[in-house]
Amino acid sequence: MKIFLVGYMGCGKTTLGRPLARRLGMRFVDMDGYLVDRCGRTIPEIFESEGETGFREREREVLDELMEMEGDAVISTGGGAPCFFDNMARMNACGTTVYLRVSPEGLAARLRDGRDKRPLLRGKDDVQLLAHIRETLREREVFYGQARMAVDCDGFGDAEIVSRLAERLAGDGK
Image (cartoon, rainbow, N blue to C red; front, side, top):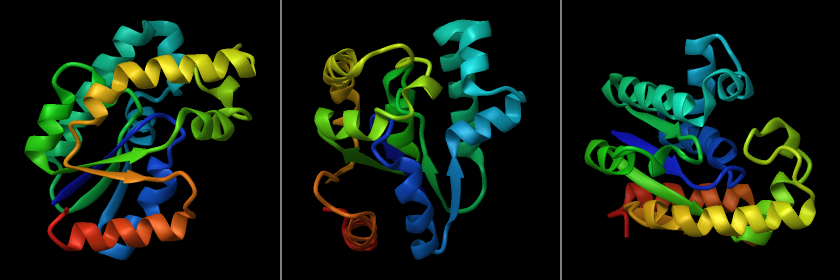
């Protein structure tokens, strides 16, 4: 079984994915980390040398590898991964997709301090950051909304979200 965590950057895919995988007795794979290891360059370096198109193509190749990997795994996807090519449909066909839903304001608060490390947020002030998140989230919601399951994360602690998610995944997923 593969569980793909999807959602906007900063929503907690990696932070929640690690303890979720432990709780479910599965391997955890951070797709961005896997991509960096495979390419030998950081995500900002890939963006700089190949642009977003090149990055998205590499991301798709990595997704292919992760879908073919043997064994059960919780996979934290990149924030944009579900929104390009037919990635979301392919993840839905391969396993269970879970949308970690966070409000634009919640995302801005989480991303404010680390925005310079994220190529798509670099150089934005607080007002621009929130506006960018709102616009991009509105565009991406059509893809994230295709997930088999959605979990609201605003106002809940990590441990509570992991518990709720583990219970839903162990049950019927509704």
